[in-house]
Length: 58
Image (cartoon, rainbow, N blue to C red; front, side):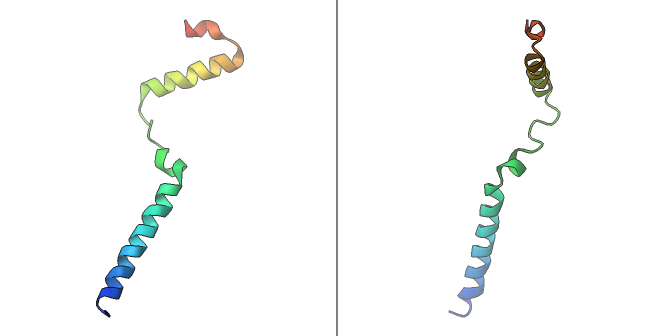
């Protein structure tokens, strides 16, 4: 039993760290669109729409 407890603790700590990481959605997606030209286009289109310049969408 004394040998199993440290292994169990290690597994539980690892699982808790995974859970903490998975709960922070912003960290998960940050940088996921890096170097993606289509994402840059989407940002430009969104900005044009907010300005009311929808002619750039054609």
